[in-house]
Length: 120
Image 1 (spheres, helix red, strand yellow):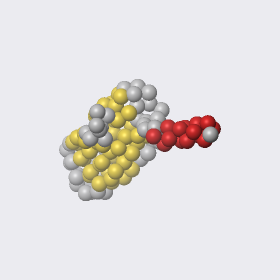
Image 2: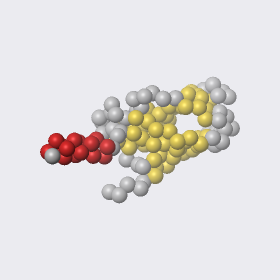
Image 3: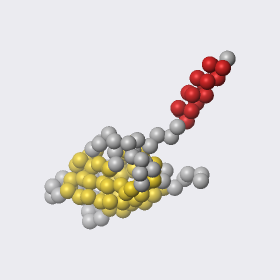
Image 4: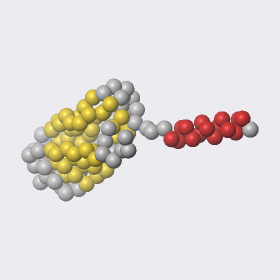
């Protein structure tokens, strides 16, 4: 009986652990396509592309991050072939503070807005 309780408790503990992942909603409202967009820190080092007017939900994995810091987003403007780098936001101990971060990419600026729904 004790072994069953132990494994049950261990399973519940493992499935209830919050993984270090950040959620981003990225909207391309510019007049150009976006190539090779990535947000750091991301242990999987993922790159995504967005067409004009496209919206994507993107997750980064911060399981290797144990400190506080800012996010860095980079992408390539497909029309001008210029690289864009934007530091923004804040995470603590490798965890996103917001439930999700909304990013709107316009022709001449990037707007970042946090969504806070956490009950603390």
